[in-house]
Image (cartoon, rainbow, N blue to C red):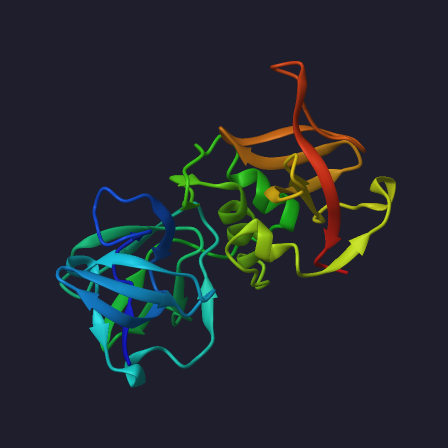
Length: 251
């Protein structure tokens, strides 16, 4: 099975082989994937980061030998926007969550046989909740997981990934991880709160900041009130999401 690596800042992953099809995920710079099927100008891929599957435009793909996929531990970029110099000397900008081999003291790193340079300092150390707040006011985007637009589970996945904790792509998958926190007053910053619809289906997730607040992607990345019933949106003066369960990922 052939493999590919993401050399663009962001590649949309679609539900079907059509540019009008909905975006269900994104590939971020440095992520690799298996190419499982070809159909005209489209490739059906499986992300090696989180096993998520979907279609990408062939013109955005970079097919490589499996041996060319970096085998050393990759670092996850921490800054909202990161500047890199490409092998031809031109520059590109890649988002937080992009993965690259660890650069040398000059910022240079080998990527798919070529040399790149990271021009953005990565020395800032942040707590998980500080990382959450980096993305405040980022617009909601279905299938998004970058500072340019993200959905609720893409937001959670991105923030945790920046702290070397790897979660699945969707809220319904993320809920299978961690330990259940029995009571809301036992929750702590960094715990995940999951929310359900009237049929009991998990439809939303956010990151708890303290015993009264949650940060989540709903319209935009925002901070709202949280209580035993769910998320209370002070702008619309009503509950927007019904609490299902709280899970602790980081002990």
